[in-house]
Amino acid sequence: MKAVQVVAFGRPAEVVKLNEVPDVGSPGPNEVVVAVEAAPINNSDFMIMAGRYGYLPTPPATLGIEGVGRVIAAGAQVKHLREGDRTLVPFMIPTWTERLKFTPSWQRPLPETADIRQLSMIAVNPATAYLLLTDFVKVPRGGWVIQNGANSATARAVIAIARSLGLKTVNIVRREEVVDEVKAVGGDIVLVDGPDLAKRVAKETGKAPIQLALDVVGGSSALNLMNCLAPKGVLVIYSAMSGQPFSGSALSVIFNEVSVRGFWLAHWSKTATDDAMATMYDHLVPMVASGAISAPVVGSYRLEDFSQAIAQASAFKGKVIFTPNQAA
Image (cartoon, rainbow, N blue to C red; front, side):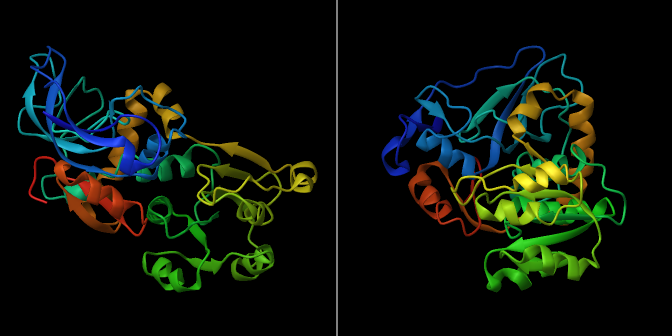
């Protein structure tokens, strides 16, 4: 059985290899064996390769943190899946391989008509977007949420999920040329970042109070979001795409009681109940299946073509998907 693995930490071209690994074998009574159909390359995978992620496996270790596959064998005590079903792989189980074995808990069969490449990306970006909107602030229907990096995959999911919850979005981008793109996917207000952002946001929203801000960029962009928040608002930081140190306003924290929170999906997943998982995916799967949530896919590759896949993904111009058991 083949798997794309990190054999050390450093430059992807030097530390990622296609290796032969032991097959997973037959399932136990409560387990399933799944043939991986699609598994995306995420920014977190590059951070793992570089040795800069919050969780680092011991090399050699198979990469990939999400995916979708077909059940090819199920244990006698598995209740909700059977051979032939398509299902999601649990978050953080390495997916850049041909077959997996795991114990399903909240997993259920997925719609057969849905795009498997879009389904394969549901466990990271759409899940993050859903939790950012539901776990920190109870924004009332008709209320506003502001986010930066609005042309990213997670931000696109935020736009769609916010709309499904009756919320409106202020979307901040760093380049004028992506404004129309974000509007086309449903962003209510789309603005280019800058130090005067708070004034422009107030004008566009009619000075509506904004209680929730979502930061994926970091640096001064985080400060600009903080300045848009109403008193007792919450800024949630879930990535730092700029690579710059976080910049915030002490005055907002002190006088407006603005708070700053961090979010990492891995922490949430460790303690989430099966019911919480099922509730989230019951909301997300139909949205992905219908196309309401989608991310641009720029390439699909077999495991053997991992070098080209990783090179294309490193340009961050769209999602690249491994299809270990499908024609690329």
